[in-house]
Image 1: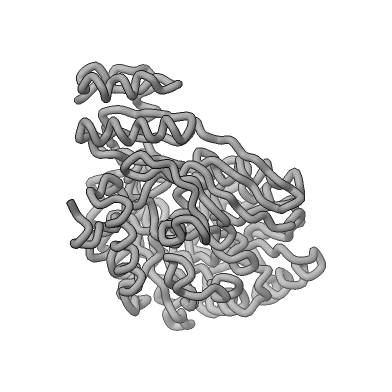
Image 2: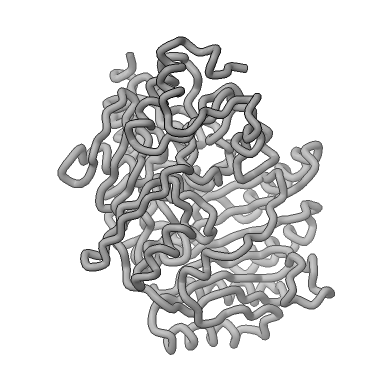
Length: 463
């Protein structure tokens, strides 16, 4: 394994000049630095560099190009495929870059991409303003934004990328560019949904939205097909102010839950209503009218609280699939409930996210997220602890996908795990894919940024 002493002199000088020491296998922080959110991905990068600004980001990119080390870029490290740490790679870890500059009057914020969703939201919420990211506070804002950004506010605010006004990006050749609708508009289009194939975004300029207290939290019901279908229908037809996820899952041990319910299959939902408090209470009362909840944690609370606090522990390994769907009926819900009950994985879940609202009010070609008119986004996942069981859990996931029905290969790139090249290509509409490859060819013809759900350069741009 390389250490900084084994690199060429100029590459070593570039890395040695960084504000923070570069971490190699002999460093006391190496084990902590190499792990991603999913600890079952036991990767051993050669080096981990933590730049503090765009100029240092450019130095790391130059060192990777000079040495030939594969370059992995990490914002929060939540990607299920573990692209932010590969064996033998040089990891460009953005976690030291957490500056945020909020302009309450203009309702904008420049934010560096080492920030987590919780850190960003806690800062902006002091002004009664937020930007929607996902539904997990520890996710890095860089990765979730580049892929689109579905979460707890997407039906009211749109995707995260719909609140992006500009970005600062370092390209493969070390240029530091400001991109927006007027400057490098092709690149600005690509980084809003096209993922991390085009450069290292060091800052985003986000639009802020006035949101203070919301009505939100978790409801869970005994699992029947009729209840599941009714909950999903209510979520789909609710006002745009309601966003979130409907799940069929096994209930984890929770202080609020009687022990007799632990491990049982339930229909759950985690939702936020960002309109008036009275309207929010009325919306959630319609869910309560479907059936008596066995968990009711819905309350009036500051929005940022939804992204704060301890997160449930994740199994180290996961098998999952994601896709878009035009509907899940009652008969399919019955199969889903039986399928979740039959799985032997310690954690198994089917998540259904209603789309529509503000997501659908943006033109499909306005950004590289080309699925504006899809009705639902689904994820089937199994979390497990023994890697020897992988085949069993992958087979279960595949059987669930087949039973629910998958119309085409379209998928939300941020939720793809170990996708093949063909699956990544199928995740995008054909015209979007072609345009992305052309932009890639212009800004990264050598495919330096390839440790991701990769967009390769168009053939006539490669060198």
